Image 1 (cartoon, rainbow, N blue to C red):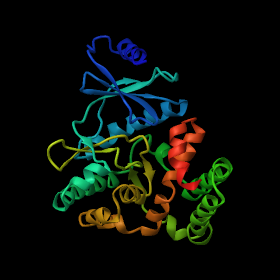
Image 2: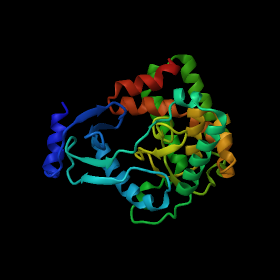
Image 3: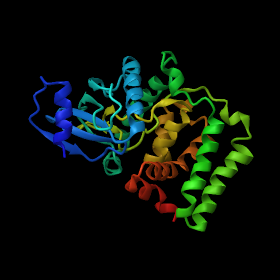
Image 4: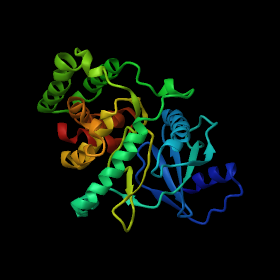
Length: 294
């Protein structure tokens, strides 16, 4: 299976000596392989993923000079083709391990405060990057109202048939309470300053050092866009809980300025995963997202 990816890499970079290849199981949108225990290569699994990887690569090249923590730096590029399986980007691996919940619960609070401060600094740097560059317009969510209205319609049309009556009711209450009463009809909910956002700032995309309780880097900018910075706060709160997010407020007080939107976004994450699964024939993503609504 992996040989076809090795072949594509060597076709583009014949001078690259490859002595080992392993499959990384973490890729939802991309097939991710490790090469020589030092490189990460990502191959989009879907047609839309090609355009997404191209956009992500441009974004990484743009934001890199503004970010202190390590982030992926595209080195090996094959982005011209429109054929799934041909397109890839390669980076040097950032040494570290996922800041997952097992690791989180094993770390002392005093060390969690250090990590919270580092992550706050990362978000401050990301959210303050000037919105300049020829690709900015393509990353901008120009009409958040329409974006969430459209997502709610897709959830109703594609996911409701797989939900229990109770699950459907929960979704209706979550969306319609905000969309109709307070959220979409309240213009104040959309008067935020748009920024670069990571878009998937969760447990699988934050790396900490193997031996020290320090952040090693942040990966997977595939969901990055220009939008509401509260989305990144929601991802932290969903992954690590409100108490950890409050530690981040100490260094980044503005992160807590939109609690209603933060809570709304948290309630959409599983639904977005289920929707992604059903729209891209990813059975595992669908099951993961829909399970609490059945």
